[in-house]
Amino acid sequence: MDTVHAPSPRPLSVHAPAAPLSGSVTVPGDKSISHRALMFAALARGETHISGLLEGEDVLRTADAMRALGAVVLRTGPGAWHVTGRGIGQLQEPADVLDMGNSGTAARLLSGILASHGIFSVMTGDASLRGRPMKRVTDPLAATGAAFLSRAGGRLPLAIRGVADPAPLSYRLPVASAQVKSAVLLAGLNAVGTTRVEEPVATRDHTENMLRHFGAHVTVEPLGAGGRTITLAGRPDLVARDVVVPGDPSSAAFVLVAALLVPGSAVTVRGVGLNPLRTGLFTTLREMGADLRLSNERIEGGEPVGDLTAIAGPLHGVDVPADRAPSMIDEYPVLAVAAAHATGPSRFRGLEELRVKESDRLSATVALLERNGVAVQVVGDDMIVTGTGGAIPGGGVVETRMDHRLAMSATVLGLVASAPVDVDDTAFIDTSFPGFIDLMNGIGAGLAP
Image (cartoon, rainbow, N blue to C red; front, side):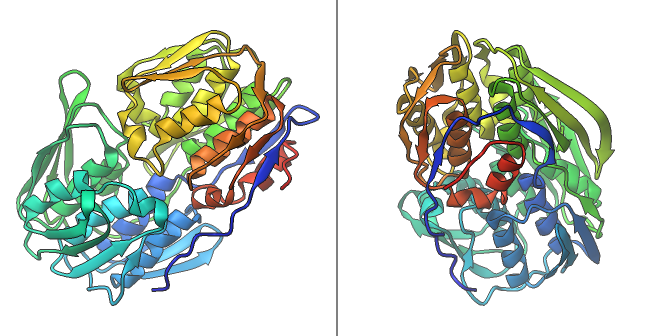
């Protein structure tokens, strides 16, 4: 497999638009569901048709990896993919290194699959991914009998010697993480017996939903104080099932927040995934006074979907509890922009997970705000943003640190700042939201390099 090289930097200077934002749009397919659709289809018997797949770089890395492991993965049209699976335990040893690009989700979930097959594999990624910790995944997975060899701190490149008859795992997550939970459950697919995961706070449950969709037996029981116990019966007969991927709520967040902040704006995002474990941002925005309207609710592919309309208006500060963090962990940077524009202070609690994203998103978000004249501080794992009441000074240069969500958040901030905001690199936006700048221009953002 060819090595994925970092794209050439694409700087952007963002100015406030001359008129309100308006229009009705769709955003790319949900990234979390897209990764899982490709992986589960490769593990299932038969032919799976996927529609609405996110065709960003992260997901394309997963498609390449499943091809390298022996599945037939074909693109048949925009967002339309066809996968002929190998069946559980039947993946082949890859002939070359698996390059996961910028995708921590793909690398961590795939670790569970690779650990539970009797093959040798090596994963690497771009500079950002090679700096991200993997030990919180490899430590529990080692109990299957798999062996891992990595750089210091469990960082990529990562060599995995999997086992054909893995031991089932029983693991309690020390910190809520859908990626770690999913890696353990994926390892349990090829284990004889029951795999059990306890999570202290409920995290996004796309893995559980899709496992059931493909025929696995998964049970979920409450575990005090908002936690859950998930059990999976090993070696299920996964059978191909078509998958419809809803619009990614994490991508919709940038469009909706921009519409809430640019005066006079009204924008609808159609077909957004509304899984209750992914909608913490929408709950929080409404608590801040946002006019966010839901219509056309429906179920597609086992996931709730609807249309969201954001209408600009004043926002006020809010105190967000730590137990909401798993349902909006990727949205905190753009939420911080909303808080900077609001009146009064906002406190976001329990953000330790942000330190191990594509960048240290907590420190990067602080830098994004500080460089543009917004008062912000970190107290322990909490972030406190002092709102400007709409008077964000701007004028700063934002270092995105190869992080797509930082780049998009900086773009939204630039649309409502008094002085232009310079974003050092928007190239990595393509990992999750290809066409972001064109879409924003289509609703009136007026973005130009």
